[in-house]
Image 1 (cartoon, rainbow, N blue to C red):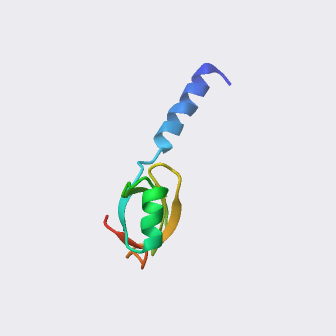
Image 2: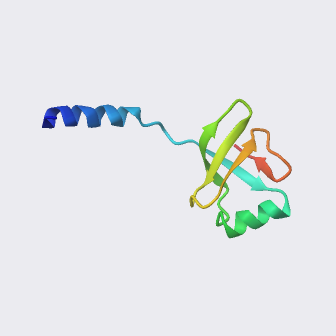
Length: 81
C-alpha cells in the first residue's frame, strides 16, 4: 500500500466515526444507589453503547459499570434523558 492509499483509507475511517450519545439516569433502589455511588462514582451520565426498540445498553462514564435498561426506566433506575 502506498502512502496515498493509506492516507485515503485513514480519511475514510474518520468519516465512519459516529457521535457518542449520552443519557442521564437516577438510581431509585438501594441496589442501584449502591452501584451509583461505589462503582459509577456518582456520575449520572452514561454513554449509550447499543439501542433496541425498547432498551438501551449503557456504560458509565468511568467505564466501570454497564447495564441494559428499558427506555422508560425500571424499578432500579429512572431515565432522565
